[in-house]
Length: 182
View 1 (cartoon, rainbow, N blue to C red):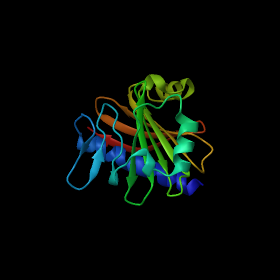
View 2: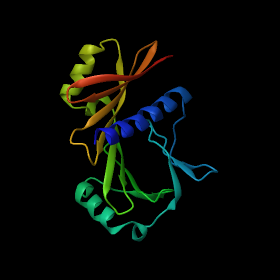
View 3: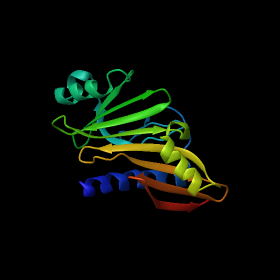
View 4: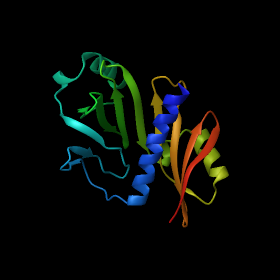
């Protein structure tokens, strides 16, 4: 369990590092020549290697059922894709929160990531970060849940005039994953 959670966080941290250092511009979904789809908004979402966009009939029924059970009341305008390794990815936005949900080949839920701004962070998380990093502002946060993890992990980007830091917050503990000078 800890190994899968660590792997998921490593991927997200590496992605955030790439985004921060690359300074990717904003925009909407677009396709590139190598069959990659990117979502660009004020909150950056990772890219997935896709076979193609799919109709709901092409998605594993177990994945669709689980998705409807978890997100029925909040999900509108959902886009489904199938990754090169045959996982299913659902993307949607609700109330300024971008959401990615990943299902395995058999339709089993693997993970979800919700990306949002500082004001949506739980109060205890936000106050601890503000107390420990008073000279920093919170750029955004990713709320990460994985199938084998019982705890929510927050990957939080904070910045000031000189530095950008990537923090992991879980079980009341903060770990600095990366620190970049501007």
